[in-house]
Length: 392
Image (cartoon, rainbow, N blue to C red; front, top):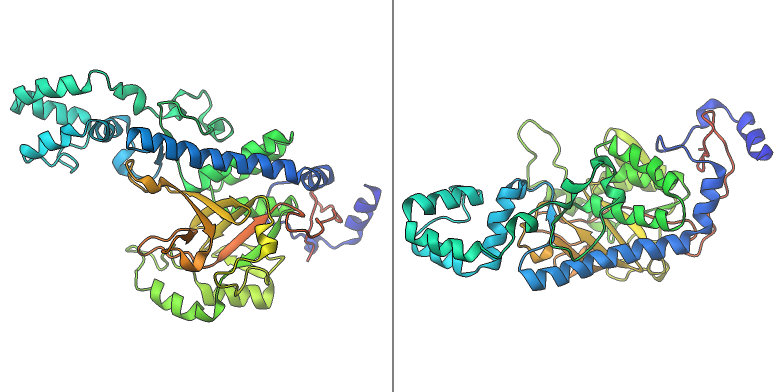
């Protein structure tokens, strides 16, 4: 410790190179390296549990237990009740179709709207409808587990995969945060995790900021891009989708050529106007095509972002398990499992593409030493009393 303080005293104040406001001690950095295997095992187990419970629940019920928290069509319990009822009582849609009712449209967005229509306009159908809903327990099925938590801000440290009837809201970054939380919990580093997550929540759950904080704790940063020769082609294709009115940038654009130039020439990945991500490795996951490097497949846990944080995807041993925040409640793809093969995102590789969201480059972080390399050795304590692992 005396050596660390001596080095810090000899460095000018401009040596500050931490990427986040999360402040870690040498003991925290050292412990992260020591417990990386147990941490990765617990975090990966959490991801597998999400994928398993999603598959089991969907097979049994016909809708997902995990619903996207940015989807306005399912953002209330009443809206979800209607969709769940239509899924578990398949005769109901047919009955309503006979009456030419747009039962999934905006005319009847909630179950109460639908009930009111049947009660006033189709009393005979209403009696039949009551028989259908008697044993469904819609209130319990449509309830978000988060509603029952005393501290909503702490929900990421509480919500876990389970087969109970209540729903769980989800997004790509939230599933990643919940499984990171589980990993830190299992290795006795809950205070470290709360320190990280507090800063991430203060920045609107920014996935790249989460990566920065983990990097400050000793995680290795890698730039990924399966084929840099196609950067200009990809940029042109993606810009066929214009930004929203009043904006100049569409978040789904990768900015592949510009960001690769910055990584290659300056050693950092640009995230717009925010502080960039320093890149430790700009070779392993570059120009690999569909042949994922074995050294990366050896990482027992990783956290990736695509297109400057537009999408977040965790995984382990070269497999991606990702959640989505805008899918329908009845979508089987709310949680997807695939091999890390970003160039084939429409053909079964991951992270998975949509029709116009093609994830082609970004940043991945892995726990210290997870790819067989030596972890960082804490060498500098900055003026704020925090470990600085990259004092450029």
